[in-house]
Length: 208
Image (cartoon, rainbow, N blue to C red; front, side, top):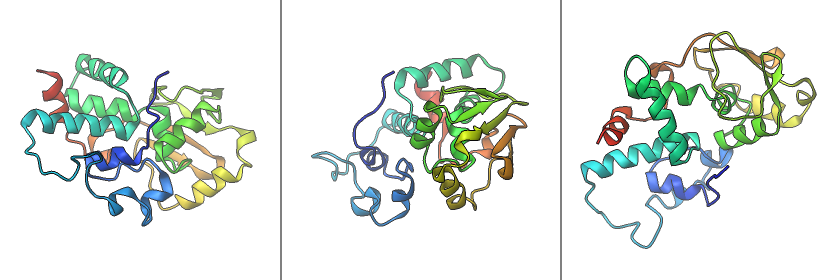
């Protein structure tokens, strides 16, 4: 599967905001946004006027990068969202939030979405008792996510849960911290998503 392998800090600089792709580092003075708060490249510090299309494109790129997706996969989610009932933009965000790797991050098992993706790939989590190692697995109401028994003794997970103890899981996830498990109680709603994404701009871009 194709994936982005370049320096992820460049992505934050290009979007001119923190995408929280490197976990703890994003909260320290080493964060690239704090040190070089301008776009990467030779012309990164120039003040170019952004067109309407450019604004829509940047919003789409930002959403893709938050969730760690490439264009083909992101467009696939958009196509599914456009065929669902309701508003396409909100459906798109709901699908992205329903990914297993995002849920693992939201629950505090990982410090970043890229790390959550790797943990899922390595087979540390189950859904309804069965191992799932596909980060893009879409969760549905009634399903239960759990950390495998063998993985619960790993310091990695204990450290992440302790560091993220103040993080409140979204309303659609009922977290049982003592048993390292969470039940999906509903579908993600727009108000549950704390990312600064203007989904209507993405819809406008793809509708051209």
